[in-house]
Image (cartoon, rainbow, N blue to C red):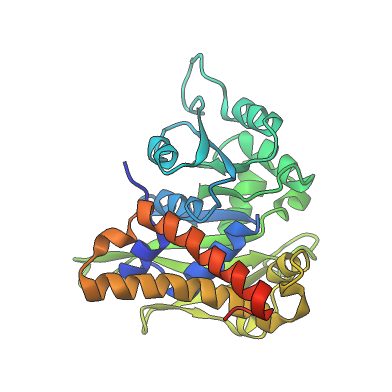
Length: 309
């Protein structure tokens, strides 16, 4: 009934503050994100947490065959959210729209963030067509069953029939999966990889370096670590975002500072919640208000000092 939040995930070690800052930055700046993993990995939970990073002025359209995203709760927070229930690809006969038809209806509704509960049938082609021609100015996110970035490519292109060139409309793939203790008695949900999809490849993204990891899980540290590509600024997606934002376009350091500041704002909230025993401030209603105030301070800082202080 209530969505998870990125601070709640930080508190439970599914994700760390830097990864939370990176994903939030990408969502706010309208990138295309697929969350991949096995059944029960926490894909939909992470999806709803990322939806909370969208500004409340954004219209959100969700497309699901099984309603898992708590639309009523989002509306109670002040979000303009349209929940569209579509026919399951496994149903024999139904009066509901197919997922493909539902997606086409949502595209006619204009400028909106589009959330696909699970990409698993013909609607994938419609979704990628729209993404490729730039029909969406806001974030497009969805979940998909796969165990690796290449597994996502294989499923989308070979199983669902999306052209290779259209697959390049995917900006980022987030891998989530449970990890088990050696005894097998306990398992923990973790974000294992954040991978960007490059655009300059022709036939095989794996061989032609179409997948570049930005963060990778280190099992010894039980932590998601930034790769050298991210640290050194070798990220086409982040550079593409920065090219459209005057403040960020001046240097890689400003992009990194913005990502880290967003993440640190969430870490501070988690630290306070632990210190004061106030886990309620990690819930969606407080976090959405907190995010709005945070960006007000960011805007004020840039206007007054031309930097994020």
